[in-house]
Image (cartoon, rainbow, N blue to C red; front, side, top):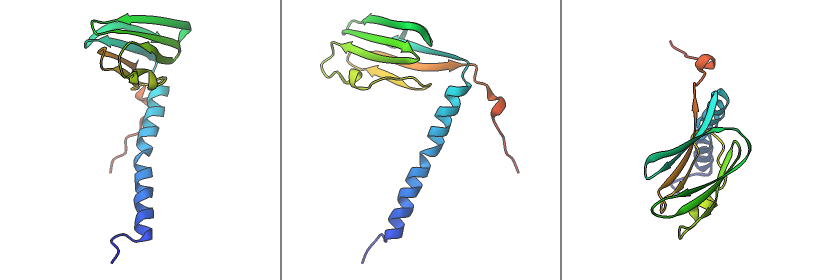
Length: 130
């Protein structure tokens, strides 16, 4: 006796796909409604620097911690780690970030880079009630 029928599997796949729709809508709306886009760079949990985006020209920043060194490149709204002296190099493989809420993390060097935005414009929000 079969537990799942063919139509059950199709419905499950469709529901899984639909469950990601709010994430994509929110990320697009949040990035469009933000007036001041900036990146915070934290070392050992403390704010190392804040960089307002977009930057006019490519900016290269070297960050030294007690655990190691990282080199990041900021170009327009995109940020990426291009060099790190940690063992696994996973922070380099994370690629570019450019939207609000995206993060780059280098755990061995205790480095966190996060893109944030100020002054969310909520005038386009719609509240429905019964």
